[in-house]
Length: 180
Image (cartoon, rainbow, N blue to C red):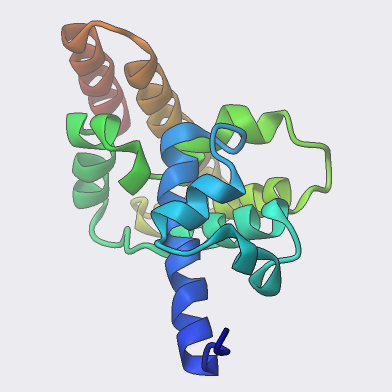
């Protein structure tokens, strides 16, 4: 069997990370296996271990990729995009904090994914703090943590209920709370 060029291997790895990032957010860390990920990426599972040490290593890298997706803008833009029914209905394209909080909470302390999740919370809270109206550094930090908690909680609850009207109410209540 011919060997894959370094460039093709890099492209394949990037594709696996992108696919895994979406699948983990859609199905959870334990709801998708290596075979599923590789198949969705259009590759055989045999090549997985040539690219990644294990599934946890891929999950950490996929989490980083999800966090790196462009979420910049004004505070109003971030609120409108995050607290939206579109975000609720498309977890594979949304924030990994909201999609994976429950799974990550079950990971052992110090696990690569838990460490990445912690960094993600700090990073997104930092972005929100930078966009928060002028106040003391500590006040902006506290407000950004409360806002992030409201964001994630609203999305998690809206995804969990089987009543679209209630999901919309949860999203609207969170929006009203963070813009007050």
